[in-house]
Image (cartoon, rainbow, N blue to C red; front, side):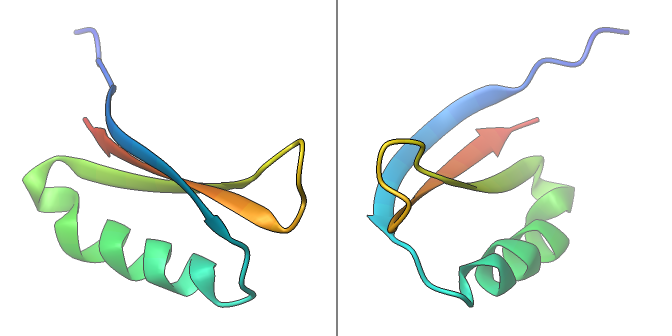
Length: 56
């Protein structure tokens, strides 16, 4: 069975030390709804983070 991950939305936001906590709680709470959340540092500006919402 092939798993397809679809990007629903992406936004660039100001980096904060606690952002990962929000992503973690969203992933734990909404995984039953087939949603997954990601957070990555922007390669061009380390003061920005890229927050992405996926449908699994």
